[in-house]
Length: 512
Image 1: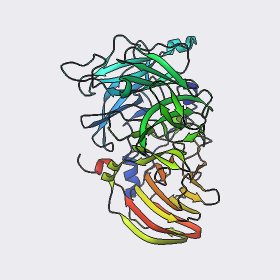
Image 2: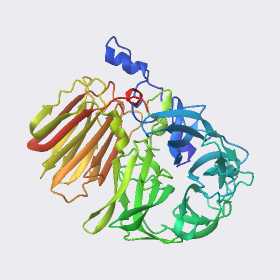
Image 3: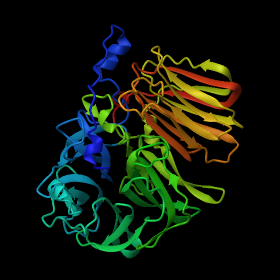
Image 4: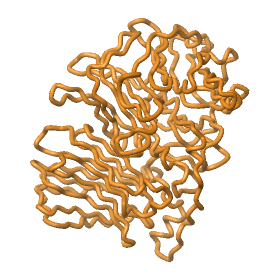
């Protein structure tokens, strides 16, 4: 999480009022708040950024997040809280953690302390333990470099209420100005907790038997990866490839992403409980769009590894034209590994739980598109999922449009062997000079058949190409919902499979 307040609180712009119209569609848009996502989580009001403390416990997914309850720009951080049975339909809960004498409540993680190593549990009830950064604004002004420390809180009622540990902080600052965002997991081979901590321009690993006393193990990254900005919001997680464990280290960076502003790089390698060793020094990116940042994984999900990110970018997060809230999360994504030319890459794909949103699909086989084809769907919401496959593809584009001249174009260019999202004509772009741009992502797959999945909400598109090898996430702010859909190809293209699935808003997807 980037905390440079001056950069976030850039000169604000007047919030754009919702347009009124006699038309039913526009009236509905205004009533629900312009640009508010229909199936991504966003708070009812006020500022949100990084997902925090995500954990699954007793049938419930807990999402905590950086939250400022007194305004729609960044302010003294709290942990907001929402819960869900399926990661799709979320219910906001009371604020979990408030600032205190040690400072604001910055990013962190949560674990189920099954063995009660912390001693916080009672009467056979294992505690949920949150590990987070305390950020002291008074010390920050004194420029001691010691204003960020790591602290604990615990819950004995399944996350409803939290008690801060009297012995906070449990990890004092050794003099590193950016010392934050602890992601903690249990390392079973050595029966200890591992903390992955962002420490300015690198990651530092700590270990503990009880979550209270921590020992430094090693650090990683001073001479590896991208260093266009500060490192933050890390995650260290095991995945399986060909029956063997492989470790992935996720590192968020701001600025320095391939398409500008905030982004997420990752490294694939081995971890022995002390040291992380990457297989290569190549810098890899989890998402080439500009709006997936600070993503980390849920704890306690068994064999599944599920990540959610903050669907925005510090470059413009404080001035996007939304009210009375700011920001949303990405859809939850299942992470995996895939080998391309003897090199391992991280894959991200939408979780299967999202299928609860599906309406009646429109499916086509061997659909040839020459020049321009409009897909007539009678879908007034503009929410949809599009799945397609194209053998030996030529250039093509998918265009989201409305009758105001707004367009978002998503496509593939054969010569560059790259995907792109172009939001230069997407509607409201003037709030930040770098917003209205075209973003590019390399196609990593070597398969002759291109496959693509798009998830579209009222103000976002998420692209998952080739089984999640190439991913892009972009937000946009049209003057009216983008309910028209075109596919175009100057050279002509044939899709062997093309399925358009209208999506229901989360609050209309039925009971849990």
